[in-house]
Image (cartoon, rainbow over all chains, first blue to last red; front, top):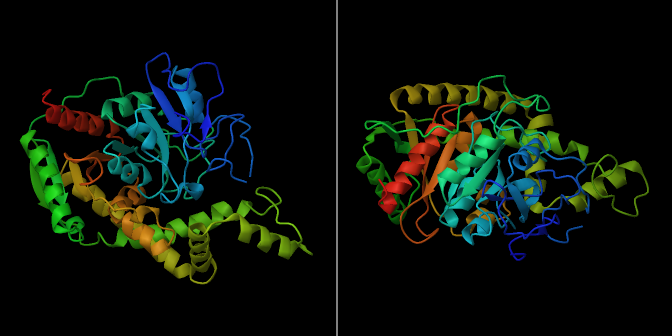
Amino acid sequence: MEIELIYTNPEKGLASEAGSNGLTVAIQPNLSTAGWPTDAVHGAG
Amino acid sequence: MRFTALDDATVVQRLRSAGIRICGMTGMSEFGLGLTGSSAGRVVETKHADVELVLDLMGESRVAAVRVGACGFKPSYGLVSRYGVIGLIPSMEAVGLLARQPRSIRTVLGCVAGADERDFSMPEEPVPGFDEEWTVPAGTRVGVIREACSGLTPEQLTGFQQGIEELRAAGCAVSEVSLPDYPLFSLVHKIVGSVEAASSTGRYDSVRYGPRAPGAKNWNEMYLGSRGAMFGTLVKSYLFQGAYFQFENYAAYEDACRIRARLLGQTQRLMQEADYLVLPCPPRGGAEEKSALEAVYAAFAETLWANVTGQPVLALPLPGSAGAVGGIQLMGPRLSDARLLALGEMVLDRRKGDR
């Protein structure tokens, strides 16, 4: 899973675990998420 | 830059409120422009996520989707809040969605769409319902844009025609429509988009935003050195172009804005002749990942229209091996997003033999 993501949600639960409505969504770093990095690539900067 | 966001974008906030799990972030191109260095679509292809959100500036969500055999959708302009989105071309970009099924896109879009008082570019208008199961009536008029097929290879044309046949077999009334000004979408996007990008990135001056290059002796050196080190080749060429039109040839920018208004009027007239317009979304064999501006524009030639006019557009993969044959784009009138996705669902269900 981690191969596909440059940043994995640190909140409890498996990365591949779906939410309460059964869907899992991936986003890109240009969608601000509090506390998450905004770098476009892993380890940028 | 190692910067962490201070607040959630409205889209992120709404996903969380709806109980949708955000599994993480995927790699993207610089500012989301083009697909250079982007892994868009891979997480959906490998089924590690049901939906991926990708900023669509010139067709990125659709091109990335069809190259992995998935569906890509750009919503109507102003339907989804851009508050908290680190954007580049404010009048053309939208939060795009990729998924293996249009149904998943519809579910997520239903959660994130709608007015947001923090996004001042959003019009106050009723949001179409996304819960209702739309039925697509037989005889839905579909117009194939004649001019959009001219740049296709014989193999791409055959694949595109197969997609049109699927629509015909589903009961759609297919006809050919013409837009002689079609080549102007690229020109307008290039001029207006680059000027907006140059303006949007003005804040990255290493004082308010962005890293600061060391060793500068004065403010000017610091500004030039930092911006020179900060941006990649593609974005730099785009910003140079935007600065040229902004400061050296503003008349061309004004002309481009006038042509854009004319193209919007022509699009609205075409939407009287057909319920949906059809365009190809051919495979580019990696050209969408180039860092030369002209090559990127050539790779996205068929997807720029919807960004210029703000129409909703759905790209569906054509039958065949993933990515090899490309896709077909269905574009509808503003706020026809739910119906457009229903049409896509019907086409894919028929392909599987479900309808």
